[in-house]
Image 1 (cartoon, rainbow, N blue to C red):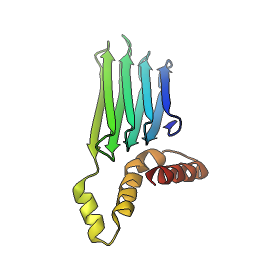
Image 2 (image 1 turned 30 degrees about the vertical axis):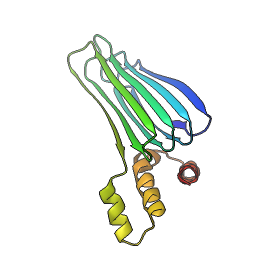
Image 3 (image 1 turned 180 degrees about the horizontal axis):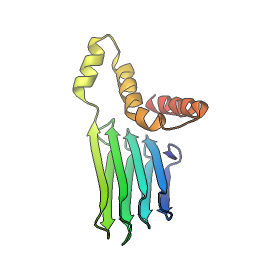
Image 4 (image 1 turned 135 degrees about the vertical axis):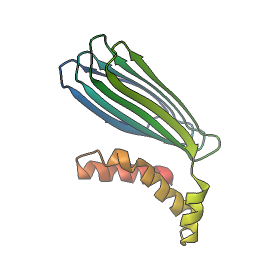
Length: 176
C-alpha cells in the first residue's frame, strides 16, 4: 500500500520482484495533494520467472497548486513466460492549477505474456456535478462524493476496516 498525503515534498521508490513461480503482487495506493505539495512516486514491477502476476493501481487527486509525478515500469525478464502484469495510474484534478504527470512503461523480454498499462488525467466530470446538484446537493458535497467514489477502488482493497475509515477521514479533511 502506497499512501502519500502529508509533507510538502515526497519522493518514494517501490520495487517489487517476483522471483518464484506463481508469485503474486497486488499493489495499490493513492496520493492526495493540496496547496503546493509535490509527490513523486516511482514503481518497478520485476517479473524474474514464469507464471507470475502483478496488479498495480495508483490513484491521485490534486487541488490548488499541487503536483504529482508517477513513473512506473513493468519489467519482464527473458524466460519469464506466462507473466500477467497490470499497471494503472488514474489522476483527478480539482483545480486548473494542479498538475499530474504519468509515465507508465513496459520492458518485456519474453514472448508469452499479458502485460498492460495505462494512465488517465482529468477534471471532475461536469455532467456528474450537474446530476448531483439537480438532486439537491451543494457543489462542495457533490465534489466530495465524486472524490470518495474515485478513491473507492483503492480503499476497498484494504482489508482492515479501521484503516479504511481513517483514510476516508483524511480524504474528507483534504477535500475541505
